[in-house]
Image (cartoon, rainbow, N blue to C red; front, side):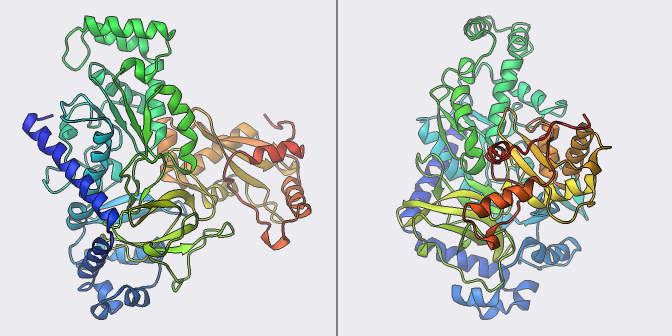
Length: 556
């Protein structure tokens, strides 16, 4: 921290932002209208605004008639015009940078970000979010010893595209803009990316070493996998940590005999497998995503930090924030009506994730029904207007007059243990590139997410005679490498060790046909029987084993 005055001002700012967020939840109408009007104001006098007649738009109904629902690919030509140097394309203020993330087909998306959007929307949301976490740990002052922030690891700008900086939202550079999110630890050595760290484990070990002497009470991450990897790094480097602290290799370059003695005693009690709470006995709260597939980490987190509470990180993506936690609900937060203009389409299990028709009827946040699932259409002041996000949410109650939403995942099928956002298209592309399309009569493979430490993907493949000359292990390595080419987030998680290498499970020929027949016999209508190249979870393995469809491993 930079001093008691600065720390006190920062804490007050988070408290005030949280109070404002709760007030908005109680009475969201005025805020929702203000945001809608702001989106109109930044979009009217632009190329997009002129093409859609936004000068005549005043109401939300007129907005729906004027602007069609679009996927990112359909909005991409406008982004391309921005990149080409055209001014005032989507927003009156031109982009300052582009945020990079994977699209639904594995092709990278570039999301424009402006100073207006950053200062008026994302920055205040982060203050409110952290205000809740400080409230939960009972912080009435901040000394700098309380926080391990794994949600943001700023580094130098490494990529530019036609002069524009391009980076992921979690690697955005530090800013000293007083209107943006400015945590006092933003310049701390433990926080900024260590250029000398060759692996994620190296990076996390550096944080363990620098924060070992801190009275840590709060760990915040976007993905729970990072907290798990932090704990694994501690277990694998317990002796090294004690040795480095004893030899004065810590941040202050001084030996720490008292700390070394305490940690040695604590680690001895655990037989060399310390928990996060053995290193930081004052730890009180873990924050990370804990809905959809991320919820699988819950039991593991409780074992890594016994007795420590958990709260959700905001439901947020590169495109913008959707929900913000304001209380102690474990997995869902109220819709962040101060972040964008949100519309919803009722969702059914048969939705295969195809783009919504541009004139699909939508509902407002005040028309949602508890217990019902909806697909999100979002407009934000960064230039993504009536964007078909593809995400599905369930209404699980309300906070005041604002619906509380829990993220269920993507429409259709997608898997994201660690933020890799793997899609059916990703798996299909990778397998077909490696194995070819010699069998086109029916689908003969499917990806299966397998929970483990770390997780991995299994591809169940009907291993036909045509594959006999191909080694299963070689095929698995080639599919894994191709999948990294197809999906940039999957590649990042594989490089960091948060995902194990992909494996192949060979099946008998005709296996998927037999599964379809079984579903039909159980009463599923033929028109509703659809093959998935990516399963929702590993329960599919039970079906394969029940039907005796796994064959002896060939070609190993």
